[in-house]
Amino acid sequence: MMIKKICCLGAGYVGGPTCTVIALKCPDIQVVVVDKSETRIQQWNSAILPIYEPGLDEAVKKSRGRNLFFSTDVDSAIKEADLIFISVNTPTKTYGFGKGRAADLRYVEAAARRIAEVAVGKKIVVEKSTVPVKAAESINKILRANMRPNVSFQVLSNPEFLAEGSAVNDLLNPDRILIGGDQTSEGKEAIEKLCWVYKHWIPEKKIITMNTWSSELSKLAANAFLAQRISSINAISAVCEATGACVSEVAHAVGTDSRIGPKFLQASVGFGGSCFQKDVLNLVYLCECLNLPEVANYWYQVIEMNQFQRTRFVRRITEKLFNTVTDKKIAIFGFAFKKDTGDTRESAAIYVCKHLLEEGAHLSIYDPKVNAQQIIHDLTRPDITEEPEKVLQLLSFHQTPYSASEGAHAVVICTEWDEFLHLDYKKIYNSMLKPAFLFDGRKMLNVEELLAIGFQVETIGRKTTRNNVNRGVADCIL
Ligand code: NAD
Ligand code: UDX
Image 1 (cartoon, rainbow, N blue to C red):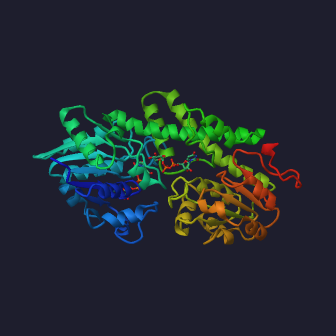
Image 2 (tube, rainbow, N blue to C red):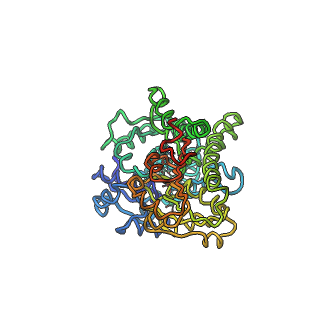
């Protein structure tokens, strides 16, 4: 049996782009992406997709209606498919056992139960969602306990490594494809079939196969290592700010060691996104359950350092603004958790804004891809504020960074959008109250140029504010 039809449960940031690329590269396969959310499916079928990713619009246009379909008819798609991806959300649990740590597997379980209920014939079920080790075993148990005659299942783990903002490119040119499965002949046969799908565009040497548990753990470990690198360089950035060392120079020196490498050493206001915190916590919980408290504590430090970095940045803003931001206007440049995405999940901007709002600052926010509705949703959540009405009064939303910063005491860069590199900072400076402060949470702007304009500049991992107004050079290079 060759794979002729694929179904994907979950039309989110992973399911949508992944299936779009599969459909693009495998014209011989029909791909149906289903979701329980009607709105999401309508958006996928419209001119404005539910998510922004460079290159995604063009890729969807090429395949949609040909061999790529978006539908809410979950049952028909399951019945017809040879291979079913489970690509549903696995957020951190907010209730019960493991609250705040463990992955909430209720959506994965619901998906597995739906498959068990309606599937006919031979199915390969692929766990694409990020899950704790042994989740595939639970899916297997649910499928087998509900098995009807003439139905058979093989469960594979095939974690996704795409990063938002570069999803299409990551899917077209991944570092590797990871597939885990049972080491039985049926398991190996299923692995081969999934390999066949990827081999349409990915060289065989990039496809790694292993046992299911290794595959599940590899995904958690990879995200934990990446997050750990950011927390490590952020920890060093605090030392830089206190000493006059420059974190970019330190990162360069450290990263040129070929054993360490240069990537993921950008100090920042802290990592965000739906994955790093959730997956590290997932690993921490796993270690706690395995009675490995030292290992759990080790990884938990990565999260604590990230929280420290965000808080430290806001404290610095408040201190530099003469220890009070109450009633001051502060322009927030960027709200997404990184550039080239409209996603705000766990964005550092949320926490920066939360602290500033608690101090009574007026925030004027500009982000090229995040709309006001999303920002209001994020900043009035019960875990962010107990006073949503007050927060609403302190917020304003802008179509340009220039109008956001007009009459402001400070500009705070939270997302490294490329367009922030090319703004007319002289114009911004002229329209602000003086002294005009600029806090660069992404370490992206040329400090000397800003100082020359007249800004008081604070950037991550560098000691920069002029103590002497006549001195045009940064303390960093003294
Ligand atoms: P998402 O929230 O964007 O999308 C999940 C979708 O699944 C939602 O639209 C939801 O309505 C749908 N859904 C939930 N239960 C369903 C069901 N039973 N049947 C049909 N649809 C259902 O989530 P995402 O960001 O795409 O993440 C999905 C998984 O992939 C998570 O486990 C995540 O950890 C992992 N992952 C995400 C990324 C990323 O960059 N976002 C990268 C790698 C891995
Ligand atoms: C991450 C992983 O990179 C990806 O492999 C996995 O599949 C999902 O989780 P994502 O969260 O989409 O992807 O984006 P990523 O580029 O990893 O950035 C995460 C956060 O770390 C962002 O807030 C980013 O700004 C921040 N970051 C990244 C840094 O602060 N410094 C860096 O050097 C790199």
